[in-house]
Length: 353
Image 1 (tube, rainbow, N blue to C red):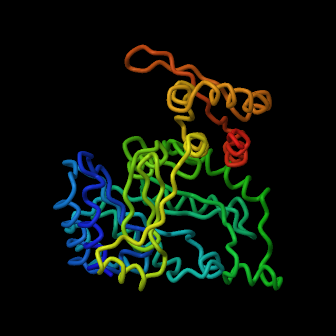
Image 2 (cartoon, helix red, strand yellow):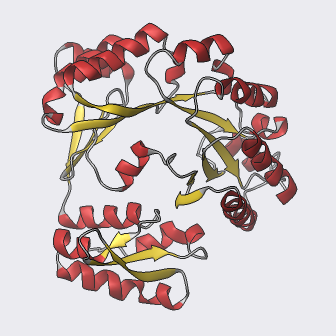
């Protein structure tokens, strides 16, 4: 697999010719299972074939049970400068219900050690877990704050079909999800992170100043990116593509010098809808100036008309900002009240045939 990843990097280097690589994200699975030498070979191939900026953000996704002291020490020498640790919860019963491999002790132990080797650490926390009262959720947050993490990604618990959790709920051995509980947790999350100096810069992401995820921010702002490996997605502003999900077929195709990819041409309507979907999730919102210039005045009129109901309900707001050149920028952003409902609101602003 690693040889195939290296071969795909070489195969596709011309796609990014003339562009700078500002972020590298090793994730979408469990890349911490790779050896240090394998990680170095992948990063080396990127530096060799692509124009990497002087100080890129290089993130590695990892599970707490993979992060021993020795492993953290060696990772710090590979060039990786940001860790994304899938904590999910600091409570044993929650971790068991989510079928996580690590335990509560490992969750805290890895953070205690990691902060000695990395100052840029983000953790994942799950809210809306049935049976988790507000005090328990607050205790989860307090532990994160105690360790001084500068970034938290937090998501409502969801149930995927055919998973163990899905089976438990259908059999009645685990309580169903409660959206009102998730909303209560979400509101508490916004309040507590604000008190601690975090900026709620994207619906699921909270970062201290200078610790926003550069990689994810690029995605939300519509910058092009290349995804390497099985199932990996890529985007060049006019096309979206994704590699085959089957590992064996992926390796076999790459060995033949062929990228096993499906390509979708994005229409103006597709690009507008995606801009609305991603932009509304951020503090920067969606710019009416950008909509008019990139998609046309028809789209600007459409979004203003579609948003009117949400202005009236206090879920969206229309702001006027001034850029560095003193130009007036009109943008639509979500209000605190509208944040929890943003995906549904965004879908109502889409342009549909």
